Every structure is written in C-alpha cells, then in structure tokens.
Image 1 (cartoon, rainbow, N blue to C red):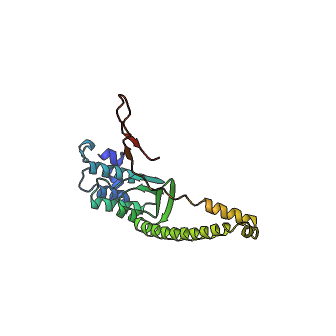
Image 2 (image 1 turned 180 degrees about the vertical axis):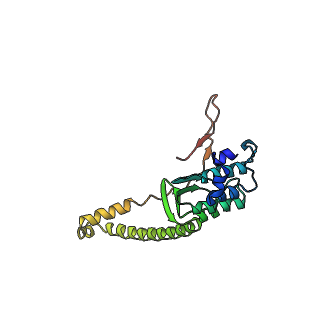
Image 3 (image 1 turned 90 degrees about the vertical axis):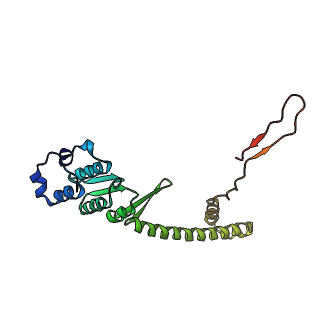
Length: 210
C-alpha cells in the first residue's frame, strides 16, 4: 500500500510536508502503509485511492460518490482537505452534508437542461423553491394574458381592425404556445361481441386507448 499511496516518495519527504502528512495520517488513520492492497476492505481501498489522489497536484479533480464506504470521521477529513485545495472540484454525490461542506456551486440536471445555483445543497433547495415560486407566478400572469388576448380576438373583425397587425400576430403566437388540455386516461375495456354462426367462437377484443 505504501507504493500505491506515496508513489515512491520516501518517508522523510511526506513527513516533512504538513499537507502530505495530514492526508496520510488523517485519511489513512488506523491503516498501516505496509499492508498489501489486496487485503484491504472496500472502505480502506477507497481511503487509499483518495489519499493517493490528494497527494498529487491537479488543476481539476472529479469525484463520483467519494463518500461511499467511508465512515463519518473519514468523510469529515476528506471534506477538510478538499476545501483547502486551490484546484477546481466537480463532485457527484448523494451526501448532502458533503455538498454543503465542499461546494460553492450546485448544478441540477433535469429534462435535458442544467440549472446552476450558488452554494451547496441547502442553498440549492432554498433557491430552487424560490425559482419555482417565481415561475409559478409568472405562468399565472401569462395565463391571464392569454385569456385577455383570446377574448379580444373573439370580438371579431371590428376589434381587430382597431389594433396593429403585430399585436394580432403576437396574440396568436401567445395562444398557440398554450399546450392543449390533457385528456384523462381511460382504462382498457374488454368487450364480448355477439357469437357468430358456424364454428367460429366468440373472442374477446381488447381496446387500448391511444
């Protein structure tokens, strides 16, 4: 494990560097550097890999679920070391506490788009709720405008003649953007037709709504 983590560094090299010494002694607390990698547990292997990563110099670090198989103390130590680094960090994790500790920006990927929020997970939740509230209020105002424009267009030619052409086109475009009302789903039904003459037996026909 010594070679996997230290990469050939002599003991006096990493012991003399406070950052390296902190990574090794904190992330690998209780794990001897002389143990073989094959004998490590899943959590110990994860800590070994993270320690080797943090001992290097990187401009960008990408981590996918780095807190898996780590205990609470190891997660806290990892977050502390990442915060102290000047390199950029991209992390994917379900650990909300970890996100709050290490992230300055949160990206939410949904429906083919990416929304950006400042801060960690707690800030993301609050900002998203506020964004949804504003979007709901904006959509309500839009629906009211649609009703108003639709009523105006239904007055007929005299009403449209008093308005410029661009106003009519804008109103039509606004109305066309409104999605049609959703049809309520119908349950599949099975009908039994009347029996035919001859040898044909009645068969059930299943009508599935399109």
